[in-house]
Amino acid sequence: MFKQIICIAAISTALAGCATTTDKNVPIPVDATALEASLTKQESNILGAINTCNQSQAAAFETLTAQIDELKANVAQLNVKEEKAVVPVVAPVQCPPSPNGDKFMLGAIENVYVDEVKASFETRIDTGAESSSLDARNIILFERDGSQWVRFDVFTQGNKQPAQTFESKVERFVRIKQDAEDKSDRRPVIHAHLEIGQYKAETDLNLSDRSHLEYPLLLGRKFMQDIAVVDVGQTFIHGKKQDAKPSKTNK
Picture 1 (cartoon, rainbow, N blue to C red):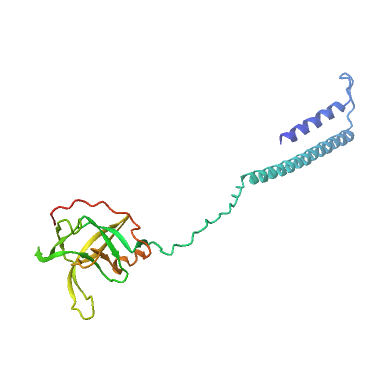
Picture 2: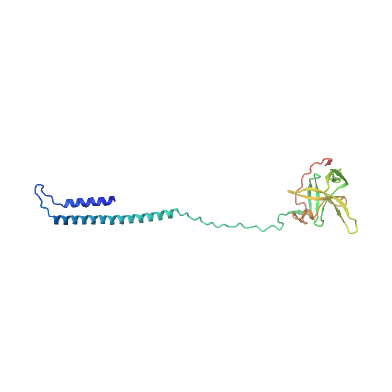
């Protein structure tokens, strides 16, 4: 609208400049027909000038609109988030699974610490035996608080040193038959906590006189099942735990 007013003012000024300056003292005859024709021409010129201004303004507005659209498109491109580069992930080389799985290795003979008697023993790891057994002497059964208990002696420092006396709750009884012709031997079973090197495990031990056997402790298949494998070609794979000095009687 402001541009239209400027155009009209410019046109009016031009028309005024084109008018012939006359002497004020000389009367000018008025020709109605000529005056009307002049006014009509002026009106036509003004309308033409206004139309030209409108066309120019429309063209400028169209150009400005195109520039705004282009600017919006550029801004939109700047706002587009760059896609993160896809970094190929190389899977680590998998080592072949151990044939032993999570099981630990035992030799045919190991040093095994039994927490219930606070002593270590050279132990036969025997896959041919089903149960585990501890050398015990003077086995006496008795009752305590309504439960079956057992008192027994163990040579914790070897056969040349006095035996130590221990007491433990009986978990159950088992019958062991050595030979087909022999009668079955009913033995009390205690629950024991063992340590073999850095490994700890729990198992049941039946108590019996093993004085005629080389090793005071034997671990059978029930102990090894799901936790250990045996390499019969090796012995004493694991270290020996320092024995604790036992008291005369442990209850």
